[in-house]
Figure 1 (tube, helix red, strand yellow):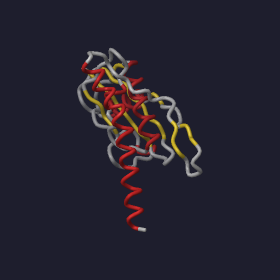
Figure 2 (cartoon, helix red, strand yellow):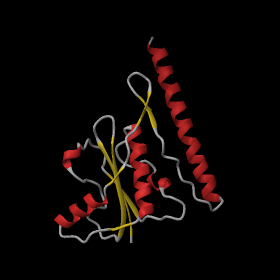
Figure 3 (tube, helix red, strand yellow):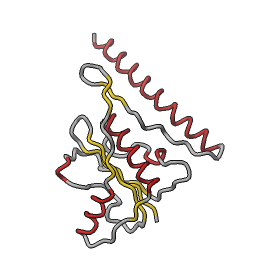
Length: 165
């Protein structure tokens, strides 16, 4: 019985790594040819307890919340960059669908032609919506930004912030 369980776990891990290798391979090939690869984040479906697909809710543009957090700390507001907002929305939907806290190859969600100096995520902890905005890069001296969050089926708020000079 124990051997069967271990073999089943190994099979699941191999299948999961193979599916992730596909988009990584595409991204590497695009980079070599000078093109940009953008992961297709929408629509994202996840399995529910009944094994029926469940679509993750919409990502919310959160730059106003980030700027309010910065203002409370005496910092100037970020200037909205629509391409960075698109990237942030894509990342948060992807992570919320998979219940992934922290970074998830964030830069692959940048639209073609967009650039970012850094990306912030909420980290590896559970953050209920009541805690407010909580990502790295929030208090740093960048000029342009895009931010978003998506509430996952676990109730966590998956936050992302892209910034550039």
